[in-house]
Amino acid sequence: MNTCTICGYSLHGARALWTTCQTCQDRITRQLAGIEQMWPLLSDTLEPTRGHSGPRVSGTATWSLPIAGKILDLIGPLGVPARLYIRYCDIALARRIQPATMPPGADARVRLALWGIRKHLPWAVQGTDLTELNTELDRITGDLQAVTGGTDTPTVPCPAELPDGSRCTGRMRYDHHRGNAYCRTCRTDLNPGEWLDVWVRLGQPTA
Image (cartoon, one colour):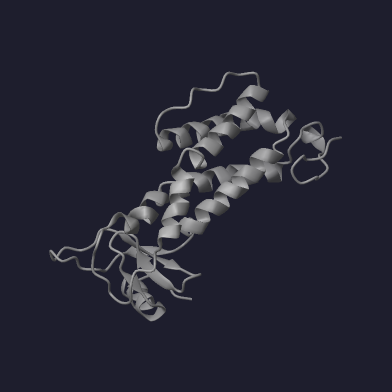
């Protein structure tokens, strides 16, 4: 009887000779899904640093260049795409399969890596130590949540009116850590009271 290489849980039944328990396999699956959802949010998060100026309902923009630097690190040569691709290669090589060539473009690399890890995961949980994969996915998830707010942060259409009279097409997201809501497209920010007013007017449920 083996123990799960990730959490140390004793494996029983059909998994007695495997290397990963069902709970940890499910966790890896959820991590991959979360990364897939958060990755596209990085471009929205970076938007305020691109020189776009727009109306602010109240207050001032609080997004800072250090945050932009973190985002650039995540999408750069040693960022999320490369980190995921390396883990995909690890699993493919452990299975004695030649990994697919790393494609150009960060989005394509993320898609390939997520696809590859998912494809080989049912095999890998049976005889491969996935501790490093789990640890890396934890780190990537934490890195993405730190700059995007995660996938469970409530959002509503931005209520800001642009100088040309049109409405902003961005989404307003509430940041529990900063205590305000903000739109990454036009950089409008709202204090908690103003956010609640918008939230209620749009028919969203309150606690």
